[in-house]
Structure formats: structure tokens, C-alpha cells
Image (cartoon, rainbow, N blue to C red):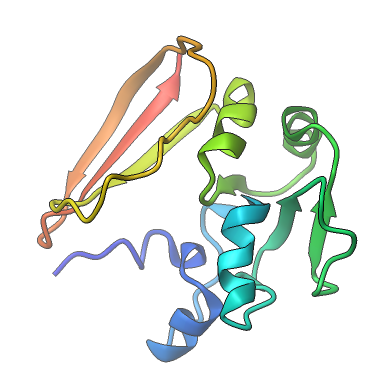
Length: 157
């Protein structure tokens, strides 16, 4: 069975990586960006940094300090922050969760890699939660996994 794990080992949480014995180095991403609401899901479960193998930035204007010294709190504009990160050496940047954050970062997104599941489990969260802003991307790859999951890639035009 083909899985996304060998191609994107860094997208698994630390707990999942340890549970299935993945010690692979980061291949695609070395930084993860998340919004406060997404980050607080882990905090509620007692996890202060689900991705210690990545540089982890959490965007929040309401959190006073990070509960984990390896998680950077950022109150600045997400788009400007991402623009600066893109000038640094390293791998790509991954956005995990948060339609509002994804919308704020949309001008800086060069590539979309979407995982489409073959089931519906709820009403969902908008991928880009904000005012309508047309953006053009072109499809660059489609992979169908044995599980029925499809990995779709798009590059900005």
C-alpha cells in the first residue's frame, strides 16, 4: 500500500513518528506554521509541540508566551513573516490547519499540496477563510494512493 509517510515524513506528529518507527529526515519541509486555534487542539491534549523536528511558528495576537521553548509565537503579520522566511536557507514551509491563517498567507503560497480523502466526515472548515481573492494555480501532479486518498499538487501561475 502506498502511503504519504515516505514522501512527507515531517508531516506526522512526533507521537505518530515514534509509534510507527519513523526516523527519516525532513524531505520537503523544515518549518511549520499554524494558527492559535489549531495549536490549542494539541495543547488541550497536553502536547506543547507536535512537530519538534520542524521549526514551529504559531501565529497569535492573544497568547502571551509560548508554553514550549521550541515553539515561536508570532504576533506580526503572517504574510510578511512568511515572506521573510522564504528568503532564509532551508526547505519549504508547511501550513497546518487554520483557514484564516491560510487566507492571510495566500499571497505567499507558491505551491499547494492537498490531500483529498475519499470520505466526508463533517461540514468542514474553509481552506481559505476570508474575503474572496481569486488566485491562479496550475495542476502539476496527481497521485492516487491505494487507500483512495489523492494527493493533488498545484503551482502558482
